[in-house]
Image 1 (cartoon, rainbow, N blue to C red):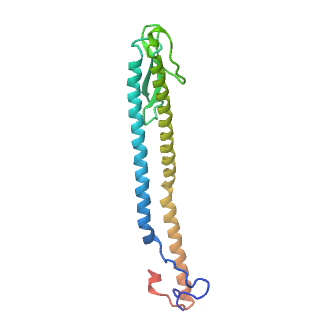
Image 2: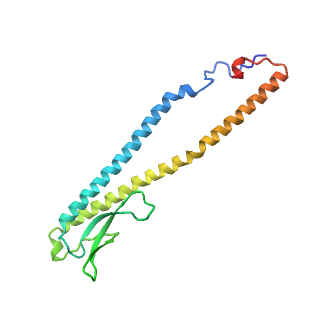
Image 3: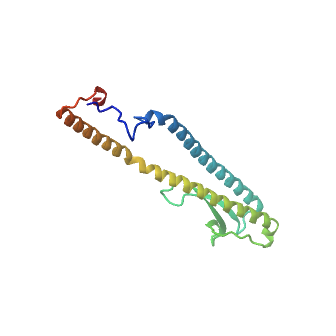
Length: 193
């Protein structure tokens, strides 16, 4: 009895492949290329936002008088020891009792209307709004990157799983072939490879 002989009936006439690996390889290459391109684009956009934030910090300095209490600024801080990247933080400079100016993080930025700040208060507020929008977009991109990294991290155990399943399949195949040979069936050599 020949095990590789195609049977008539339900399955006859269906076009299919015995093995799919070679057929799908060019498609996988296209998918990989597309994913790599999108990841590169995501990182480029992150760099563009950070560059725009640097520029907005410079513009913010120009719009406000120097060395005044209440002046806004943009600082890049690591918010914890585990941070890989410095984060943009909108700050307001406050004069301490000893006379030193100290930056304090702010969530909502509203420009002061006193004499020193009045000349460019509208430009300062526009700049603050732009900075807050850029910080928000940067956070969205970083969240996408973080989600992608977490998703890919789940692949770490996949090699073990696949190798384990292939080993089980080899054991099943060997057992099935041994049973067929014991029962007197003829086995073609390509099945034994």
